[in-house]
Amino acid sequence: MKKVVFIKNAVVLTVTTLILRFAGVIFKVWLGRTVGSESIGLYQIILSVYALASAFATSGISTAVVSIVAKEIAVNNPFFAKKAVIKGVFYTILLSFCTFVLLFWGANFIALKFIGDTRAALALKIIAVGVVFVGLCSCFRGYFIARRKAGASSFSQIAEQTARILLSVFLITRFYNRGVTFTVAAMVVGDIGAEALSALILWICYKKDVKKLNPVKLGTKNNLNRQILNIALPITAGRYLSSSLRTVENAAVPRLLTLGALSSSASLSFFGAIKGMALPLLLFPSSFLGAVSLLLIPELSELKAKKQGKSISRAITLIFKITAVFGIIFGCIFWFCGQNLGILLYNDSSVGFCVKILAPLVPLMYLDSICDGLLKGLDCQKSTFYYSVFDSLLRLVLVFLFVPKYSVYGFIFIMYLSNILTTVLNAKKLLTVTKTKLNILKFVVWPLVVGLGVCSGINLILNKITPQNTIWVVLLIVFSVVFYFLILLATGFIKKDNLKNIIR
Image 1 (cartoon, rainbow, N blue to C red):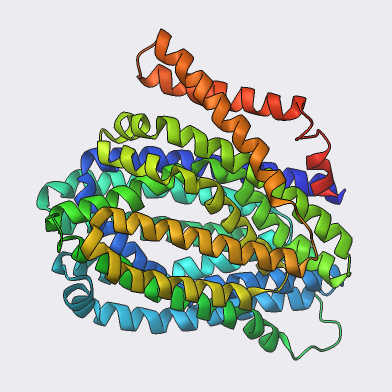
Image 2: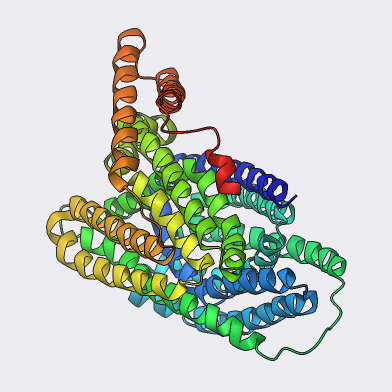
């Protein structure tokens, strides 16, 4: 029965993530064509401030709720599972209020002194209101993940994305002619309105579902606060420190680019192209991996509590294998048609350049993301905290050293170095903790050879029979994926029981 629930949740989350990311990419395409990369660049900097402001109210508390609720339900203590959610909501509201005061009253100062663009002040005041909704959403989603019920979370996310797109389009079409200030503010209002709707939906679903637990108090337990803080503090501290450093980096990069050959407008445009357009496109195919990673947090917490080390090690091995397979083929695809995708979707060659040049990082980005999630499920959030802070510090130092001298290429080099470093650190820690031994070369070399060979062959064939238009791009993607997986199946690298073993 548990396997069926896991499969159902994985399918629900994967489909939801695909829908959300597809809608997100289409929305970003519309934004890029409507408001331009300069507005998107400023919007991305404001989002980094938003991420920093939300770090207190989201990251650590959400993971704590997932872990504690899963444990309490596993030992048949639904009362304390409900109490953990209530405490999580309390901490979220308290910290969100503090963040609101600082951000709202400091908006003008942050825009002028930190971002260096007074056009951001209005949007910063608006996002101050939205921090509490982000925190509430994270708490309630954590509860439903722990309950192995993906339906409510998925429904709220689809409603949120729908509301975000509709509200943003409605506002942007009415205000973008009034300049960047009102355009970015309209985009932010769309985000906040969508988060508020999602929080309301999740709260209603939570109230209905928690009654089914019959949370009658059995015994006493006075360490819930300690449990929440032990899990939340390292994650929140790490996320806050890394978000702070990343926010400084995001604000500094456009400024530092102007020290070279780029103008202020061109530097913001490049930043918008790489962060707001290219990266969402590169991460789009990882929907399945993200869903599995999220679902495995409560599963791994339970397996660790039951001391089932062999089951954990077996799952980690197969997850590494599947992540490598997915990441390599899409990295190859983006390398061969990235330039075309940038022009086709955004009508912007600079986006295509970013997609193509970052394509080799795709397998590392996918693996790093899933390792980070699995480590948190194994109660290793302190390690992810140290790695995240170290990476952010290194990036910030290198930004000031390389970007003024090497401009765009300096920033791209930093992205490569950062992704390689964090992936190696997280993967090594995960393998050490789970006592899993892997032949990394075996998982990489053959899929890479097959991926490059398939994409190269199909590229050569298609170039002889059709121009590099939309049809060319679609055919290259479809045929590359199909032949790649057929070859891996035929050679025995992928076996039909792999997914079944992961579920076990």
